[in-house]
View 1 (tube, rainbow, N blue to C red):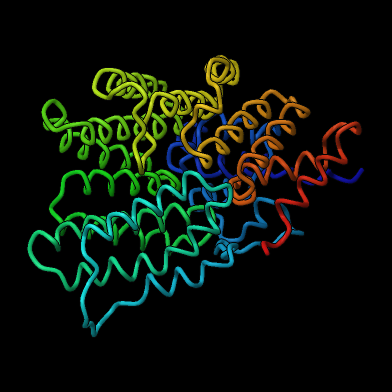
View 2: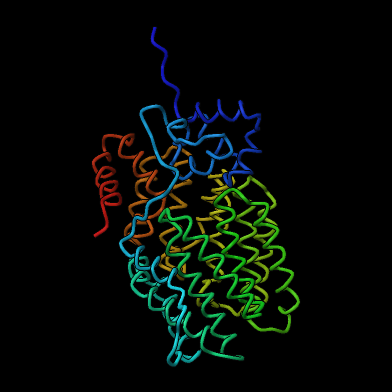
Amino acid sequence: MVDQPLSPGQRVERLRRAAGLSRERLASVSGLSPTTVKFIENGRRSLTLRAAQQLAPHLGVHDLGDLFGPAVSLSLDGRASHPAVDDVRRALTAWHITISGEPERPEYLRGAVDSAWQTWHTSRHQRTEAGAVLPGLLDATQRAARLHTGQDRRISLALLAQAYHLAQAYLAWHGDRELCWLTVDRGMTAALDADDPLAIAQATWYGAHLLRAVGRGDEALERLGEARALIEPHVADGGTEWAEMLADLHLCLALTRARTGDQGAWADWDTARQVVERALPAGYVGLRTRVSRPLVDVYAVMCAVDLGDPDEAQRRAHALDPASIPSTERRGRHFVELARSADLEGAREATLHLLVRAEATSPETVRYSPAAQDMAARLAREAPASVRAEAVELAQRITSPPQ
């Protein structure tokens, strides 16, 4: 009798046990939730490339074929998948060693940065449009930070940090980890040089997302705690931007805890909810962060999904009108999260329906989301015959090379 080859989940379990790790410990160091690790091991969830990349260093794996099987050989180095990545990379590594001329005024740069973020949140093709403006925005803000002096330089540095944050948002799903780290480091350096607490807290928020993504959730929580201590003393008298930042930090804390299976995520989520409800005007929407009452509800769904509780995710989503989410990109991601919740329950028709809605909302959010790509690929193989053709078409649309 021929032995059946081990599934990827069985390989993960065998390597985890050989390394002497509990599921909870492996989840903590890899940035996944214990529920996700459990579902991968027992076959309820497929092992995605992204999850494999997060798990591999902690399982002693250097060739992803050790996880997927001997017929698969995958590099741990991601490849850029969006056509504008090369242009953004060149802008990030243009150091302006020699620089002259007149810099743009801070007022102009603020308008340009705000416009870029507005485009990110309102366009259905946010990555393509951001990729078109980022090289010029990075160049203008880098020049201004070098050429201005005094208060104008501090303002320019804070705006440069925002340009780096937008570059990180653009690059996050394109597999170029080194560029993501570069934007995080440059953004924090610019914020610290600006000596602006709000800019520093925002840079910490972005840094925490990357730390969490590479399995350094404990560090992310520490850094977020430091940023919270920096912001909290100013909230009572500092105006809406301080309260907005504090709420955003607590939302990031909540999601970071949820990704490691920590039910304490709900305490941070509730703190964010209270800050938004008590310290921000009704209908308030942060220009760059999109902090608002609907965004707090979006995070509740995300936390429930990452905690492996699809019933709670659906309960939280029931009262949330997707049309109220003040960002096309966030709305698309919300539908992806709902699809993940349906996927946890094995509801394949519902998963497909929600992915189609996500694609209709924001095609690029689905095309570049590792979770959406994984679900679509599995649906193309496993969906019931009645909807398999639609699943195959969806998978082909979101995996075909970008034009």
